[in-house]
Length: 75
Image 1 (cartoon, rainbow, N blue to C red):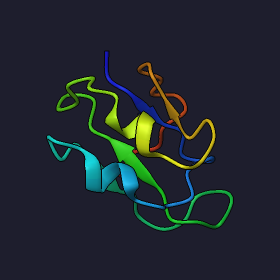
Image 2: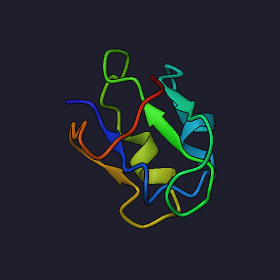
Image 3: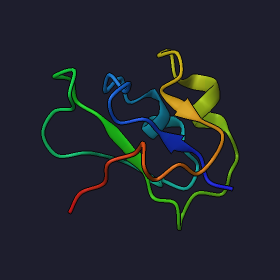
């Protein structure tokens, strides 16, 4: 099951994007509700390796489940 980056918790650190072995994590356009940059996971490309969860320094920004209602994606 793909992982989820919670848009309004993400702080745009980008450790997840840099560590992802399949490059399925992308920067989102604009800012989130906190006014920070944010990232999102392409669920179709995610291989569920969990590296994003391990490297993210922001508590609860990455979830080990697919929760599209918590993750904004570009329109």
